[in-house]
Length: 97
Ligand SMILES: [Zn+2]
Image (tube, helix red, strand yellow):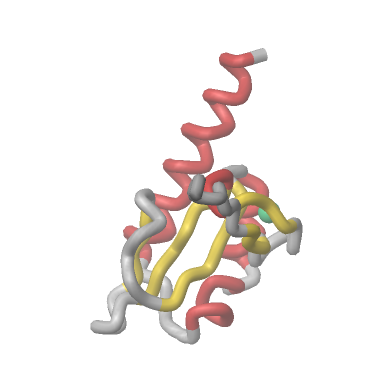
């Protein structure tokens, strides 16, 4: 029996667009209460998702949407890492065009 490919759909906390999980950045609140950017999508904990776009990251940071989704304060270095990933993704987008 072939394994069925399953594509989980998640919603960006900033723009509310549903997208395949892999296309989004996952931010996870670990069981310890620490917040991390989860690039593998495999870390245990409560997750929130953002588009890989600078505008969504900025919207989420400004409106504290991740804090609300995860019910935890977002460390400044995590915010920085999110922005860095989003800028990187935007640049890759430009390169592909
Ligand atoms: Zn978005």
